[in-house]
Image (cartoon, rainbow over all chains, first blue to last red; front, side, top):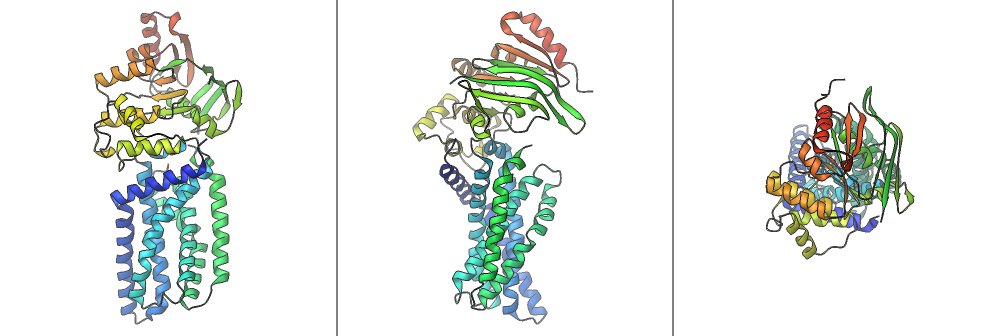
Length: 223
Length: 237
């Protein structure tokens, strides 16, 4: 059996190399975020709303939609040429494959989200520097939970005829608790306070989703 | 290491459709089996079951290595590789990078020189740094064969493994496989290739094994008769 560390290293190196070469996740995800931010900015300006109140929602809307687009892209490139079957046939427990895939997806989506923070701060006049560690903890714990669910859902919907439509339809309701936790935690962090309660909720959701994924992935992969 | 796979009354159902019924056979070291049958006879289903890609609906498949039962999927997958018309390689990586990934995923320490030697064997040395998606169909299949050989499996599950290859390629790989000590289960519609590659034949018809014969017990003409009868049965059930 392959050592777990070797699986993680191989998966991360492969996904980063592919993304550096194709830039498809960055282009489809990050550029979509900018367009979305512009749309929200125009709507806020037209509605005479307070910019600083809308910032948190804007960040999470971008994460939600670009995350969905990116996860779909990641899975499409993984299923091309039957690559997923190649992964399944490796002498590795399904659970470790799942966790390594979550790590790789977190890295790709987290990178786009990191670039999104200063942009949102610029658009919505947010003071992101005052409480940066809590803000980043809120964002990354939220993205991790989003990716943990998405990596499972993508496999569930992979063999269906309408997988591109079904993926967001199944994914979005499942990540509503993540969205609630993430938005509230980010809002409290932007007010300069420590969002401990919300961070604990996000942490608990991550434990639940990652454990479920680890235990069920092998079963979900079976055709 | 010696292996043995025992299939006991194995069946596979997809809703009401019986893809495979009551299949009982054994595969062990040295077996080079050609699996023949019409479209929809259950050939690929059987390979998927053996590769643990899907569980049987009925019956049991038991795996043994050196006389000891192996029941964990990673251990089972360690003893076999699956080669089909799908290359299972990433379009945005080069041949060398793809094989490096496969080696790491299988926990194999291998140098670039050793990988290049493997690529040389499959006739892809000069194209090793080409992106996979820019390779022709035949070149992709050659890389896919390198992928299957890399983990040094005991059993190869081959589903139309030479599709897209030119006649030189088919001759090269037939020779390469025969020179190895590998065992395999080959699915092909090319009856001559199936004859050349096998020392046993399994012939399926409508999900049932109708003939299991050794090559030594069969003349070429008799073999052709059996194979044609099964392959011309059609898929209507």
